[in-house]
Length: 565
Image (cartoon, rainbow, N blue to C red; front, side, top):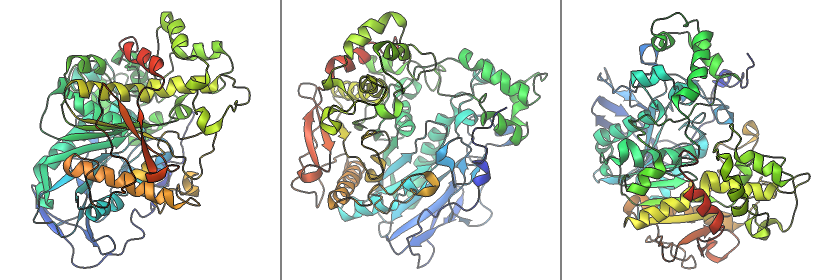
């Protein structure tokens, strides 16, 4: 069995400090929640209180492994010291590097501005991305200090919350046995239980449980989408708005069924010696951690994902949106200009190369073969369709990849852009406000041939000018380093727009907004527009008609059912 990330779990030594540039002083803040008293840390640097590593569920170990999360059922014997980030959930990928991981990982963090304890502040609840296979709330790139501080600066204070949830096979194991037991999509159910914990407890921190915005990027944004559609769009009153950065209610992948995942489950059973057990799933719950981890951390370990289980995920998202079965709350939904350079396959030199990727059974989204000629027509090899676009890199041709830019346009749209446009159109048609954006700034360290690719907006949304979480360990550099003041200004603009929306559902109306920045328009189906965040223009933004690659994106939207999503 070939180990892919053999060193990841050994890297559970001291992680980089999430707030290494903060100073702490004053008495420890305390709150009384349902399970007892919690104490945290006060930061004099940001004038914020941090409550870190708060459990929101029973540890999912032993008999609770591969089960739906269970609510806490005990009280603290003494004051619970929430002063350190909990370990990330076990995952597999570069986002785990440098951070401790554990099965016991269902914890959340609360960051509140000081001085508002007697008020009821809105909540911004962050769900990290990572393809549902890696990441964690302690990742320093998701430092909530700066955006919470900016909320105070603009007169729109809010409380930040970030959560962990189980990843890869630990959180998305699928098979006939799993479905039969009712323990499907437990990664999403972890998130849901965290939302319930917030409803029950955030008032103790000075938060208003009726004013929660769920917010995420990539798989985290897709998670926001799944909550908007959960239980056939049932509104449980858990949130009043959503922010989706490069992810949408219609999934970025074609859904596969429990039958597709059955061989992986059977291989796991065999690798752990559970093949002769009467109840193989129960046997897996008590299998040695090392055996289960070694399997998931191997080439046989599978690429587990969300399934349509008839319960949490009742139907394909496109059908729910078409029939209006979603939680009708305001949203922000956006994507980056060159998403396709992160997701498109390499080596696309001919039209035949491109065509073959469309039906590849290993692709994220799979198109039935008889639609391929129509797809090729919808995505021509013409400059107006290229990604990166001509205005970025001119007529540059990637060596040996004459049709790579055509392919990148399709794959970026198939995974991100089309469903962003479709969501905004659906929200607008149902009389619910939506704000759409395109992020169009290349950070430091990103090659021009990669362009404004996936994830690059994150450092700006969090106003992470210090570059926390970037560096040699991760093979990255500070996105702001060696850049002009316009980059600092864009970080402030984006973080304050998000903070303003979290506070009162308006990304525009806040104190200190640059008068040169155009107002971010509410999406309209008669005149659809995005705001474009771009350091190369006055005010760091401009508005554009959301009509680019219209025929291609419409093809993707029209064939959502063929894509099995």
